[in-house]
Length: 295
Image: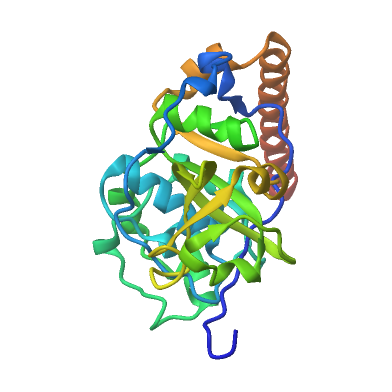
């Protein structure tokens, strides 16, 4: 590994949330044995390099979105928006769901409109959303996602979502440094896990009569197979522990009708009512305090 570039991860565990839309609700059970031996949603627009930053969620997210939007998008702006949702740009890394939320709430900025690059600004500057002109939010809105759906974890769950939705999947793996410079990007042995790392799944491939998941990494195009890696199905089931999400062109209202149970719908309505009551009480408290000051 001497003189070889070192990379970071930056992926945090995905907190559980029973409000996630479950992808299997869209299609039900599918026999994946009928799928072809090789399948690629679409070739990457560009393989990028996150270097030693903790921006992997933003790089993987924009890679997934680029396949749908058919335009190069800026992961640096995306990471700042992820941190804006979190409310703290100093915290390390991010989780998959928060990354997805940034694409739904803010969209994604076309690369050509970005004023900054990794080679001229440091991590802290780029992660702080206050350093980005708010006017950039407008063109980013054009690339907003409608809803994100939780994909069944594991090799077959990923294959089902890829083939039926015809778009890439945002996921993550316990990355092992031994994999970074693997020959041809083929990974069929477990190494020593270092940290969580986010990836974009773009398809699967048959290599020596075995099925491998095809992922787009963010370590540049001079590693792996020009930036792509191939994970044996057994490793996917063992090491891809962060879940996965796919974007679907359905509105939140349509998604709730399809994916939410009656219990979740009732709980969400109660939550919204309590939120409105809390806001009303706070406003009333402000008025009472104002009246006391005046008198």
